[in-house]
Length: 274
Length: 110
Image 1 (cartoon, each protein chain N blue to C red):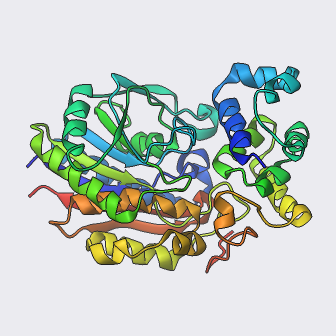
Image 2 (image 1 turned 180 degrees about the vertical axis):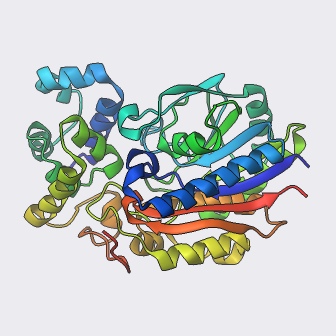
């Protein structure tokens, strides 16, 4: 069993670009939770991090949109956004193409995925990495789920992606962590940016930590966009990690609606090696 | 209506500084490579963020286009609100999945 840690975290760009605009105590608690997740990666001896995110038209567009894609580059670079705006310095991020190849080969036995040997990280990856691996010393295997523009993956297929990732990770000798980013309610880059549906977020997080498959697969995109905004399509990233970790109940380490960051910022642990 | 090509142009502009430079100096030549309606061409010429939003451009593309054209965050949000007021609900794309008038969330926090 080589999965050593799994969880979810938020990737709101406001956490770095508008960091100082949140209440100091709230900001401290959020940073403490990220530090706890960072420490979990260290304590579990994590040697590679598989990060499941939903990029925002940084690499993929509707001319050939992959439903699922896994990175297989020699290295990555990010953030693609203006570093002065995101307040994260653009840097090279280490990869492990051999591990990527092994994961992709195994996942493809049950789920069709694209692979990408070039990949520029946007805030969906770069913001979590800024907090979780600030020295950029951990090889990353990026996984993308199209959550930006329908048609989107049916949730039961996203669940199968999570199961496939777990199977592939457990076949690898490396100690691997799996983290999904994004997915609480938000209406990003729209006139409604800043609105948050806290009740919806709390229900989702509860379903995720208890791995309630039937409840999670019962979400519909029509209801999700109506109640939680188009940004909540990113729940697929968390659902994928929940599917990969059905064998353990998780914990919410932090959850608070932070309007200036435009979403409920949350950090959960969904699996920790015994 | 050719929402796909408007978004493709913005996607390319967001990723390619050389194309953006050409767009600023010889816009006609750049937009000629895309299959755009007169309304879309007018919105691009005028950097009419509100109309582009109403035409259905995804905010994740539109935000960067607004920023590169000097819009502050607040001005960008206001431009979309003004667009809804002037042109009516979003006509196509992702946001037309709901009523296109903006969200009706249970709690407004900003």
